[in-house]
Length: 120
Image 1: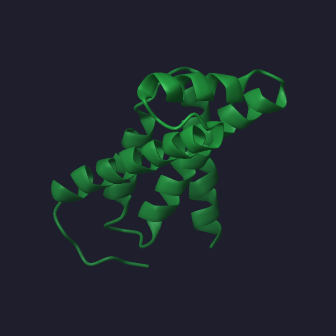
Image 2: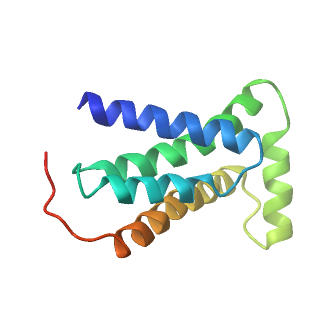
C-alpha cells in the first residue's frame, strides 16, 4: 500500500512539473516506465496512469485557485475544437488524455518486454 502511494505521488509530481513546463508527452513516458515495472510489481499500471492524470490536473487546479481565467480559456478551446463549451468537460477530456497516454505507454512497454511471472 505504501509503495503504491509513493508511486502515485512520484508519478503525479513528475507529470505536474513537466506539464507546467509544457512537456505534454510525459504521461506516455510514465506509462512506459510503469509497463517496465509491471513485470516485477503487480498493480503498478493503474496507479501510475491515475498519478499521471492527477499530475496533469494539478497545474490546472493551481491556476484556477490563483484566479487565472482557466474556465473561460477551457470554454474557448472547447469551442474552437468543436466540443461542448463546458469548462468541466474539457478538463475531464484533458485528464482522460493523460490517462490514455500513460496506458498507451504501458501497452508499448509490455509489448516489447519478455513476460515473466509477477512477483509481489
